[in-house]
Length: 286
Image: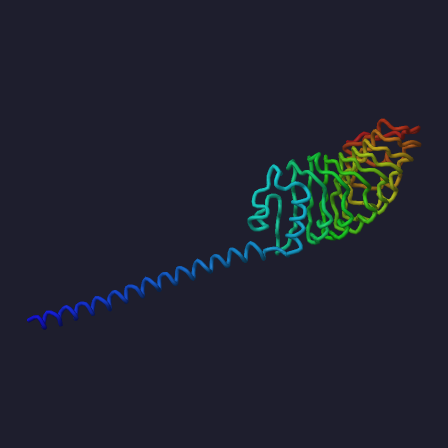
């Protein structure tokens, strides 16, 4: 009887061990599958975070962040932590940074040379941060894809590089309300796609380049509140689509060319507070 019982116990014990081992195998297999899934997600996240943009772009943005007081920006969500495409004010397309837009963001410092490595950027827009100073880095001439370049209402000083024409895709150049000095580069006249040129409220000197008349796509030309001298180039009057023109509050002199009176596209035409000695008879816009 005892032997029979032991056999039965051993039988059930053996069966229990088999079932337990099967259960452990299933549990282990489940854990293995879960671990594999977690590892896959971790690798995917790592890949997305680190490889979504070209390294030179991410390093250029890090340099910009450090040079302009990034930790104290008004908005700096995800900078240096999340994927570059999630960084506040940054737009990424095809693995390259195509836009940096930071207005009213408490930028303090200077724009580093490294921004010249953002060679696929199309829109570079900063503004309304008086703590942003220093010169516009010469490296911007590397940004051949740049279409919109805005640094407005800041404390940028120095001159506008005459190599700005290297940015041949520019349609909007907005550098108003800064402390820029020196002349308006004649080379701006080579920017055939330019539609908006606003350099007002600076300390620019010299004459207005006649070559600006070559910017036949110009819609808006504002050069007011500077220290510009000389005459008003008749060539500018040949821009048929120009509808907002402002050169007021400068030191311009001589006659206002008759050609300006033939142009009926203007919605706004301001030439006051200069030293012109002749004004043509302007037609009233219908």
